[in-house]
Amino acid sequence: MPEAEIDRIYDYDPSYLADILKSVKTIAMVGASGDKTKFSYGVLRQLSEIGYDILPINPNREIKEIRGLRVYNSLKEIEKQIDMVEVFRPANELYGIAEQAIEVGAKVLWGQIGVYDDRAAELAEAAGLKVVMNRCPKIELFRPFWRPRLDLKI
Image 1 (cartoon, rainbow, N blue to C red):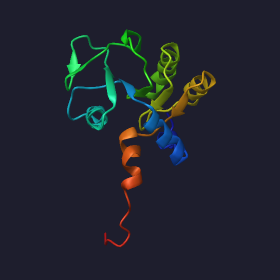
Image 2 (cartoon, one colour):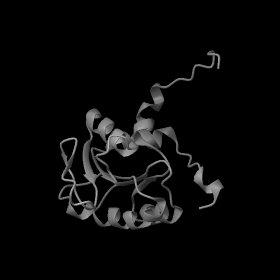
Image 3 (cartoon, rainbow, N blue to C red):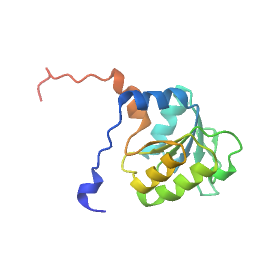
């Protein structure tokens, strides 16, 4: 991937992001990790503590639970409505995950920071899903409360 593509920015209206985060209840987290040093673990913890129903997905059959939550090996194993599929996998896997999200009837496809693919977004949007890429829901949830302190010296 070209260096310029790594920092690609997707602009979303803050109300679009807020509406998604207010409307979803069940989040399937593809690429969830039980390793406390991984970013996905921190996001899983925070979203779970806030009250979202988090469904961790990790293909490693040895991992049975993360933070007391049952781990699924794929989206297809989940037997309840999935509102949002959050992706912590490499960007080149996003298209296949978008196909799976459509298949299971998810309402939102969300690519974590660094995870974006315009083809996957087009596919998901054409199927009626809302799409967010290269963003973190944990950060977006707290953005309205964060105010820069421009008066502080560096």
